[in-house]
Image (cartoon, rainbow, N blue to C red):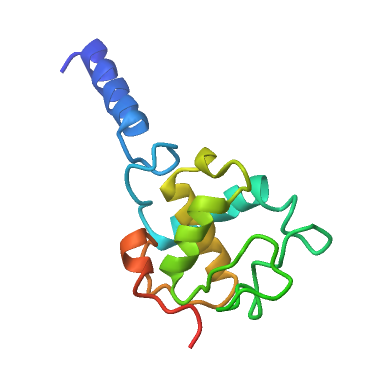
Length: 144
């Protein structure tokens, strides 16, 4: 193989890797991340960028991480939440419709799932070693 065609082939492979639909890091949300760890890391990054302004100790929104966060029934003080979170699917569906407030469509389903996977990883909820998606989320009980 001559040198110019080798370089073109390598550039083409690199370009395909970057532009392939559903690659982790794209905002298309076409497919899941490569591993649960990748999903949690992506969720942590998104949470830091999009959620911490409200969901912090001195923020206006409720605590969303830790053993006592995200209770099954909405707390009496809840301003937005009126539905129970029996399963992770309930939580994920609600988050996809409501978060960030007034701008939920700014995140893809895969990005919402990543944020939820991160929150749950920090709250002791076992996702069974799977990448979280709407299908498997409905089978994971939030709290017994």
